[in-house]
Each structure stands twice: as C-alpha cells, then as structure tokens.
Image 1: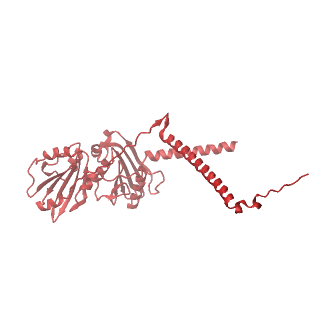
Image 2: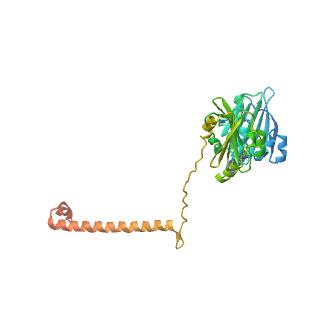
Image 3: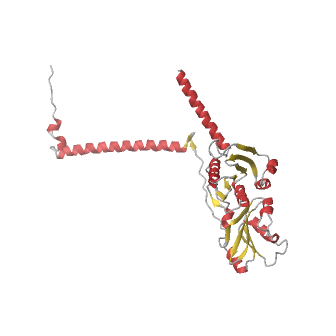
Length: 362
C-alpha cells in the first residue's frame, strides 16, 4: 500500500512540474536555464508593462508610438568577458511588430525563421513574430550563437505565422528597393523615421497606413509613399486635399495617383514617362465572396429535426426491408408450387429428399 502511494505521489509531482513548465514557456520567451552552454551568469533581468518606464530603454519612444504593451530584457555573461542581450517587446498587433522591424533594422528584411521576418547583422538580429518584436545583441559572441538564441526565442513565442501587411504588396516592382522599405502605424514614428516628406504632401492621419520605399529607374531616383485608407470615399477626400506645403527642391518632381483606397505619392528626379511606368502598376480590385448562413436547427415536438429525420429514415428502411422479405418468400412459394405441378421429378422434389425414416424404439 505504501509503495502504491509513493508511485502516485511521484506521478503527481511530475505532472505538476510539467504544467508549471508549460505555463513558464507560455509567459516567458527567454531561453531556459542551461539551454545554451555558452550563456553564463544572468547579469540583468527586467520586465514591465508601464509605459512610463520606456524612457529607460533604447527606442522606448518608438515602442510607445506603435502600440506598446509589455517589455522584457535579459543580459547574460559569455566567455571572454562578452555578453548577450535579449529584448522582447509585446505590441498591440502584428502590424506594429512589422513596423518596428522595418524602422529599426540596419540590413535587408528576410523571411523567417527566426520570426515571421528578420534582419541580421554580425552582432545583432531583430525579428518580428505575431505581435512580438525581438532584438538579440551580442558582444564578443559568435553569429551562430546569436542565431540559435534567436530561434529559441522565436519558437517560444509560438507557431503562428503572420504575413506582412497587405499594403506592402501594392508596391510596384519596377525599380523597387526592398531594403529601403519602411512601414508606419504611428504619427511620431513617421515624423522621426520617414525617408522623406515630399513637399508637405504626406499628412499622416490616425485612420491610414503608410509605407515608403526608394526607387531607381534608368538612373532616376526618388521615394514612393503609399498609403491605404478604410474606404475609397475616405481616400478620395484625402486625395482632394493634397497639395504642396512648400515648393519642392530644384529638380524634384511630385506625382500623385489614387486607386480605390490607395494613394501613391512619388517624389524624385523622375520624368513623366518613368513616373507613369511606376504609378501605372498600382491597382486595387475588390473581391466579393458570398457567405451563406447555416439555417438554425429546427425542433419538432421538442426533438431536433436532424435526429428525428434519422429515426424516421431508419423505420422506413426497416419497413421496406420487411416488405421485400415477404415478397421474396411469397414469390419463392409460388415458384415451388408451379415447379411441383409441371416437373414432379425436379431435384427439389425428388422422393429421396422427402423420404421419412421411422424408428421404433423399445
């Protein structure tokens, strides 16, 4: 009896430990203890959700602008007096995380893993996954360790995958420089990180998304600012109010186009022909999908119609089966009667098949 009790106790403790580990992974995106032999002592460990503390962090003002919710940071010691810093910022949605990636990266964005998309430098990896943005920085550590730690953090965030915002897909391909892409979801981030503000044309409003990228066609260069609005009517009102706040610099031309809820503003040294080549590729089409509502389940005499229908169909099948059996038996009897009258010596009615043997038992 005691042995059985000990077995149950051990199983309960193991289950409790497993549950605790699951909860830990769900709430903590940092590597587990001893997961990486290269990581030594934990130098710093902080976590907060108070926006007032963002002033203590690098790029805290930008975090607040795009939609801050939670911040976490750990610093590990590594061999040869090196260090590795992991920062994970939880934001309001995946668009905010992608915006941070485009605004703070220092190299081209690549498809993940780690994350849904990432940028990598010799001593720095940034990535965006779902509504988390992560930055892993190393000092005196190998690029391989940085990547392995980034993959560990990415896996702990979860398996969900978010595509880039749909606005990004509308950039024309001719002359497009993907390494220059910047995506904005906040006013202050646009003011501080915009590639250029074309003559005062771009006016950021809360109900719009905006992205910018550089273009180079036939030696002519410039910037395309592409924005999308909730409806075509809102975009039309914005488009009608467009106008230069100041005269553009010498040799700089500005072209505009609206396509549905999209508005494009092209600024640069482009001549009209090249500008048309770029802007003509911007199109927007609506797709209609019919959605049929499933009828609500009906009840008859308090019984769901689907269940009652199944019962009725079963009874009907039994009735049909009985009728078929009766008809088959009646048909066979008529056949035997006819066969006995027209062919008495048929195999079914031979005397030896009907002979009865009487036994006297005393």
